[in-house]
Length: 92
Image (cartoon, rainbow, N blue to C red; front, side, top):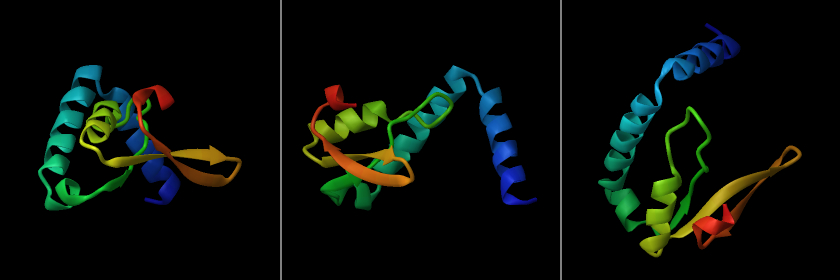
């Protein structure tokens, strides 16, 4: 299977998931992440802002800001990606 076929298969599987399944899977993923020593000790976090059918990240972003972590989210300008620090959810 080549890269485009793999992406198509993953996109199809994601589109078959219900909102409840996405939410439950997201909670499990984030719970595991938050238990890691690396996450607990980091001061800076680069994270994407979730879109539909992706692992939900908005609550994690809010929690990281509350914890005092420096949170950076990507923004694409043409073909160039820059990370911007956010200090509140209003900046998303």
